[in-house]
Structure formats: structure tokens, C-alpha cells
Length: 315
Image (tube, rainbow, N blue to C red; front, side):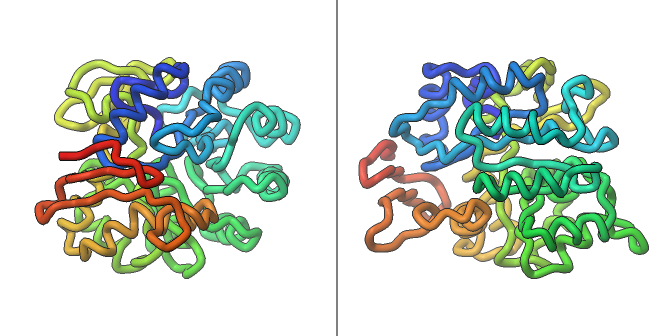
């Protein structure tokens, strides 16, 4: 998520992270990755320095860098001036600058394979996104060990029956986790159902939330971009979608509302995202693991939230 509860993570300080964390706990989030969108390197490095390193509640598992190595054709609302072609020196600066855990990049860019190799060396998960990759280009990256795709269908080459692109490549494989934004805006109901039927068990819910999540409609920003939120849809200039105002509990309810069992919908918000990161100590309930618990009532409303066994929210 790019922000939450009125806080944009690109500009957040310690107080901002505390405020966002409190708001996230109220919506059942016990662990998350703040996302930093494409921005000038100095701004990214400054933002990385502000990420809390202590025992925050909810847990901050690391940072998701969404860019800057993205396709110029599929930027969405990411600023073109800050986009960069693959550059190992720049990548190392960013990785040295803070707790990067996940990076989204476009695999078709010249030099992307070297970035993937470096990220894997540094134990950073690679996700494909904001990309114009063909199926062949996507499969080449998957064969290098990339195993997930950022917000499937959005900001990527469209699926066409003779040109399935990265969408078709990801759905056709059993070793790729597909991330989707189930807010009723980014994907049509039928599209989300097709994804589930093709990839049940390897679908990860993401929110792509901005500072408006947990807040009311109105004017907000994501980085340097001014956006408007109306009836839950976040749009930048010319009406382009710019993230969401979705909460994770809403995403779970929405997926469940598409006919997915509650157990599987919860899994798409917990165990599957943990697999994206290769994390063994979050997203599961098991003896010896941290007691991060969200208790739901029969209406899928949050009754209690615990992090490390401590109650932080109670109805």
C-alpha cells in the first residue's frame, strides 16, 4: 500500500507511520509492506530512511519499491521523469538505502535480467508489473525464478487471444502468484472470477491503497501527484486510476462475495502473500509462530486484533 489513514508513505515520518499503523490495526492488518512509487532517487532514499526499524505494530515487513525500472508505455500515474532504465548502480543505492523487501519491475527492459539476478542475490522478492512484456518475455523472467505479478491486468499489456502477454503467461503457469485488487473498480467481477478459477490457491489480495484508505472521499496526493477520490475510486489526471481506497478486510469480503469460500478468501490475504515474500513466520497460525490474530464475527466484521499475542483492537 502507498499510504493509509491520511498518510502517504513517501512523505511519512515516524509519527506518520504510527498514525497509519493505528488505522491499519483497526482494519485487521497485522503486517504490511509500505509501497514507494517511482520517484527521484534522492526522494526514495529519504523515504527509505524514515521507515521505522523497531517493533512496530502492525509489523513492517519491509518496503515495496514499485519502480523506477518500469515500462514507459505502462506507467499509469507514475511520473515519467523519474522512471529509469535498468541500472545496477542505482539499484544498489536503493537497496543499501533501506529495508527493501519487494521490487516491481518490467522484465522486457534491456538489462532487466541483471536486475533480477542482483535482487535475488540480495534476497529481495521480484515482482513483474507496469510492463508491456509479451508472454515470451514474461516466461523468460519466470524461468529466472520470478514468481509473482503486481496487480494483474492493471498497468500491463492487455490479454488478447493471440497475444496473451504477461497476464496469460502468469495464469497459465502453476508457479506464479498473481496479485489482484478486488475493489470492484480495478477488475470487473467476471475478470476476478476468471482469475480465481484459473489460479485458486495462488491469488494474493493487495490493496494498492493510498492515503485515502480508511478516510472519506476528497482530494489527496500520492507522491507529487494530486488525485481525487469519489465513491471509492482514486483517479489522477485524465481519469487514470491511481491506487485505491480499499482496505484488506474489504478485499476479503469482496472476494468472498464472488463465491470464494471464506477460508480461501482469508488465505488470499494471509498465507499466499506470505509465500510471495518467502516468509515462514507470518500469515499462518501454528505453535511457535507469532500470535498475529484477527478475529471475525459471523458477518465478517472485525471483533479483535492481536499482534504477537497482545490485543490492539477489541470490539
